[in-house]
Image (tube, rainbow, N blue to C red; front, side, top):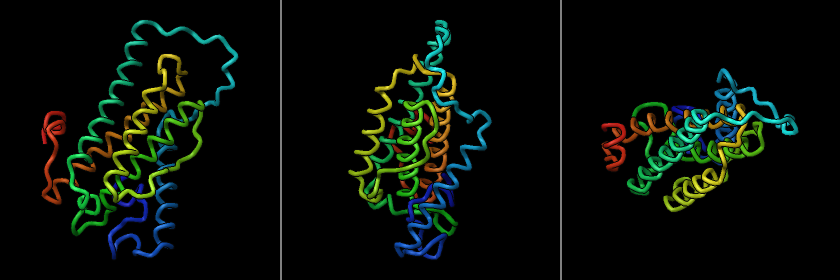
Length: 207
């Protein structure tokens, strides 16, 4: 996710890996391993597959429904903020890293965000974690990134959160945590490279 994590092989020269395809592939694998390790550290990640679907599920209370809807609303807002930032940045900014520090690039950050959205949403739909994967092959191309961010937002919008089991909701909280942590990292990238923030980030994070 940060620094050396969740990269797509786009680390700067002389950093974690070089520019060769072999290094890029190795770094992808390392990113996936680090992402999986992060997941296992979450205290409530153990997800039961939906073998309990045949059982009668307790109907959520009005307060629980309100909290569930708030979770989905927070996810949608965090997704919109990510889109706003990428839309605001020039395409060349996607190739920037943290100067004089070991880091991936902004492109590596958005690759990890898209992959986590795809993987978590798939897990929520299935009722169990199915592993990490990312379909964004061109994270340095702004329009490709924006299209992937839109597609993942649309897919999540189609999930009825009120019908989810506790384990599925926990995956939803995990996705929200992951997205917001990347926002914190992206703030560092923007400041370090003397870029600017969109208005929505000025309001949300007072940056």
